[in-house]
Image 1 (cartoon, rainbow over the protein chains, first blue to last red):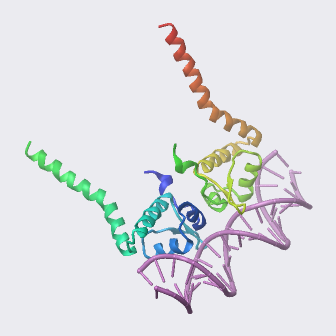
Image 2: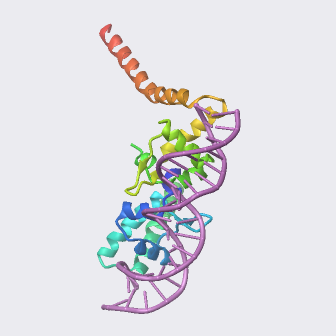
Length: 100
Length: 100
DNA sequence: CGTGTAAGGAATTCTGACACG
DNA sequence: CGTGTAAGGAATTCTGACACG
């Protein structure tokens, strides 16, 4: 939907400024698969605003001492969470529909 | 409002890919003040999605043979156009308000 | 006027590795 | 595990200028 939010257009230097995270940290979180930047032909990483938001969330969790492995799981469920919620809601609707 | 749309985050290389315009053209349109990118500390130009949209409009006009000077005027009025429209509408409202 | 290009310098980004813990 | 750093190479971006028209 929000095409701008997910378009990968920023270099790692900009992401560093926007998030305050070091280049090392940003690359490491990718290695740990918490974010998936794209690459230019040459190989330079490109990030989206969405990635920046995720990195900000990661930074918060890390400050709390949460390990990257746990954070990855959280990120997945917070994404699938919406989906799961919708499915449950769908089932509820179907339920009431039947009893109506 | 749309914070992502106006945030200056892209390097000229990305803008080149997104618009198809040459680096030379992108820099020239800045020199002619059709766009106003920001600069990093070092001096690298940074563009927003909004700038990319403007460049696309510029490219269309240029293909029609419109000169940069004319395009700049068009861009200004198309921006102030909305404002002007609002002002007129405001006056009309005031008018009918009075005659009510 | 608008755009291409060669020129030289400066800063960016990349990867793999060693370090600490 | 998470992050810092030094290392060397490769690609990016910058400016001022000459060229064509």
